[in-house]
Length: 492
Image (spheres, rainbow, N blue to C red):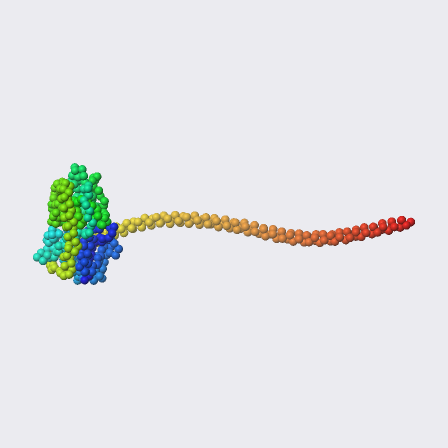
């Protein structure tokens, strides 16, 4: 059997903080897988790659996966999963209507919750008080109170957290997201003032603003040297930090939401072996036993923990024992039973059905109008930006046109200069050609004259050679003549 589990938040992973919705999904998935069921988990696109982007996308994805059962951890996703012919369970682990009453989202929350109640066949609640609170709402949605469609599915505690001894210097832990329905300031100031009076101890507040950007609550923590704020930690590091502290404190003020809520951090405290000190009207009072104290006397409760080491050891052991019992398999046993049966509950048209339908339609129309107005505003802003851009472009075009005109004038001047240069060079070329022709003619005359002179020189060389030859002959003749006279003279 295939179970589709739809949730928000990134699932557990090393080095990663985690949200309550993701822990709830992990709890159901673990129990169902241990029972032998195939579980397919899908999340929103904003929580990681591969998630669904819209209600239509979620519905298409669910139809393509063809599950036998669907569990929806967040109420706002349930309407998209209705009418698929598949039994649908919706997890009501948080008092959403009460939470919304602390802000300005009550109409939207009512519409979402009523849409989820119209879509679901069965509903999971995290504690008995929430079951009571949802009963009247489910009756208004058309469910028969005698055949309650709720299943009690407590929040599971993490298993296998390594135990650590309590520190020598007391360290109390508190924390969570800054939701508007929580008001830790007064109680936390009393804790810090009492630790100051005793001269010992500190408080660590883990958490802060919601990780997904929801309303930050409108309150801040007091500034005090004994208060430390590590912020959001990876889940495994957070549990390790819890285990090394003394106890957890949870004096969040008195309101109906706090009286109904069992937070995921409470289950984490038990898993880490931390007793929880909380107010008398907290939902924790129903399950604490020896694993903590539910009292509005903050100072006496702190003294009980600080002045009784043996009592603290027993409380820490009781907290670890309570956490060990709150396994995923034990807490989600009703989930496994429902998946096996797939039972649905008959629903009639409730008194609020029409009103809720009208409210959803009105909210959808309001959202559509808001989206349209936002789109119009974006379009008007874009038009304004385009107009400014067009004005800038016109200015640039005028500047470029002027630049082109200047360049054209410059090109004309350059062309005129080139024409004058060409004409001048042409005249110079003609003169050079004429001079070259004259020089060539003169050169030819000079060459001819040179040839004539050369011929005359050659003739003179020949004449000189003949004259020299004649002179040699004359000398020889003169010498012979002299020789002849001498010879005749001696004879006479």
